[in-house]
Image (cartoon, rainbow, N blue to C red; front, side, top):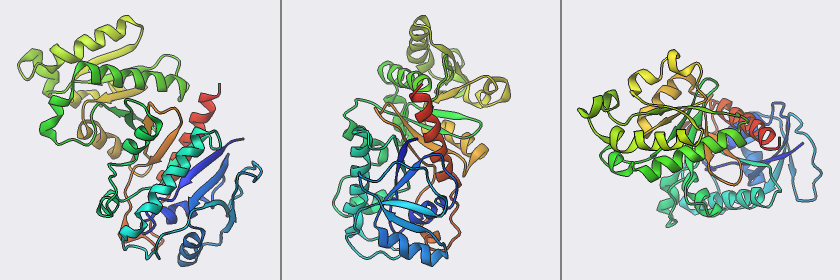
Length: 327
């Protein structure tokens, strides 16, 4: 039995909604929501959900989740919240959710953390500097590099670069970045997903993987030398492959993950295959963190129309990773 922290995210968004909906389902762990408990009460009433909200403390026994109830680590809102209306005054509250969840996974109180979506714009509008969950957790954990990976029931796609303008991508890809990305991906597929010998497909950067240097030289000068070096260490790496043919059954049926060079090279394929069922995993952290694959959907907050499937998937994958990590 283990305990999972779930941050409720932007209070004006759908984070509280999907968290409450997820609490109605069976779970193979103790779930602890980090939230303002009155916010959850108000949102549950708005959604017509009958859920028992219970105050959680570090003295609360470790017991399996009971559908229709939810343990809550109380963190008070800074300002009254209206669904769909952002309030910069609550930005400190959102950061405090992450701060306490991170402290909890680092000290072993929680076996993993799952995050609901936040609104980066309103946090920055409040005067706080916030690039996103991934960067925040990297800094808190004190690690030099992390890797973003999205996973669906059929596919895992990790990224060498993440949120960069397309014109900056080629300059950001170098041997060090690629090597570190592959080492982190390979290590976490073993330790956190229980895959003994991961088979990783590596995309080229350029069309047709550079066409022998006629459409770009990054494959020849950067990608191939790194793959050759890591193969000599025993990694099972296939590539660089043209991205327009990599995502076909011929290659994917025996692959454990794909490493894409940039955000829109790999993620549109994954989301087309499993939108709403895919999740975000931060690799390279000394703890387990999963997240939903969508944003705050302010227009849906409080309406009952928000879908909780991605949050449920994030919880389930976190449970699987905990089990693999403990073997």
